[in-house]
Image (tube, rainbow, N blue to C red; front, side):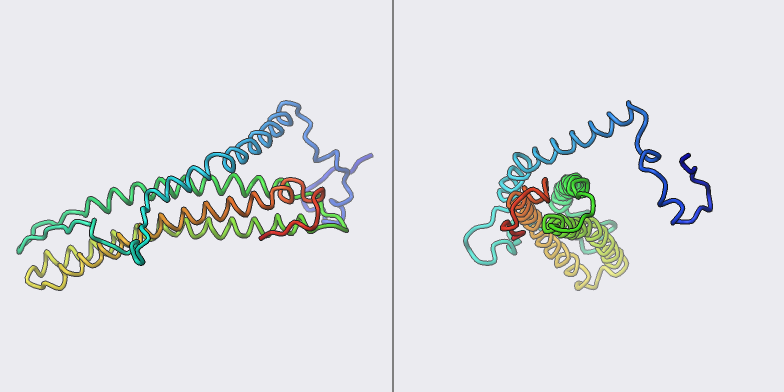
Length: 236
């Protein structure tokens, strides 16, 4: 007779319980889980075949970097916000607002893709066994790299909040001390700096897509079938 798990049972007692006690018994739930994994695999294939290459091209066009060194740091396109001598209020920089909206959309899309790819790799990690675990090592390192890109992408949200907080602080100073020209100049400098930062962020996301596509396609066999592919395949 199979022992039933009770609250307070020791780990050694629980470890002796048969696998059948944790196996899904409801056929609808079981089929739903199988379908979920199938859809996830299909989604990852679409990401690698269509969406990620498309984002590389799209973001590269958005950055629009010329061959001239330092072109990404150019702020000629950014229009200066006019500040009156005795301002009652100071308007936001509309160009930066538009770029922030675009960047937030790109961040959400990249994080969504990374999340689904990372989960797919995690679910493809096989049962722990002795012997050939090189493919599993590739999977684990890929998960770490995906997490690193995910963290870097999330940090863009924090930078947006910091920009608006700092600009609001400087704007209140300009309204309170309209005769101090340096506060007005500080707003202009902040706008220029963040304009460049956002453009660099778009370039970074393009680079993340390009790097992820290269990493995942080169190691596809190891990621999808970690113990069935040849050891000669390398992660980089």
